[in-house]
Amino acid sequence: MSRRRGGRPVAQNSFEWTKNEAVPHGADATALTQGTANFLVAEARKSPQRPASYTEELELLIYNYQPTFTALTWPAFNFDQVYFFDQPAPSNP
Image (cartoon, rainbow, N blue to C red; front, side, top):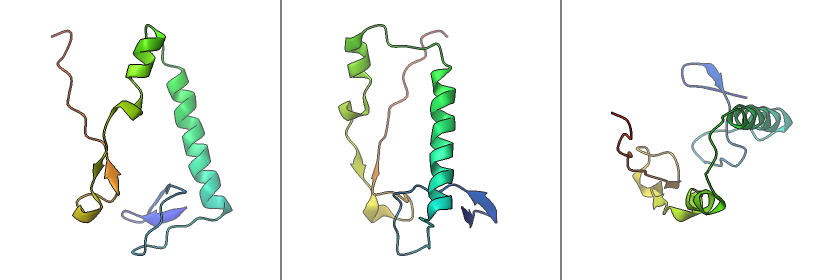
């Protein structure tokens, strides 16, 4: 567990590597990240929302979107690649 952002404990990505910070990659840090991921997946599975068809499911995959390289914009973005999505128009006003 990393203590950043005002001294509060935060989970770090197991695959986050940087020269600017000492991001923990030990067993405890990995277990925390995995536990957080398991919780989020379990919560998402509770949602009744499902694609109407296999074709719609394929259309929703992240692979259909182009990431933007942002590593040179640090510290504005603290990631090498970011996905930007347009906000969809509200279907029910």
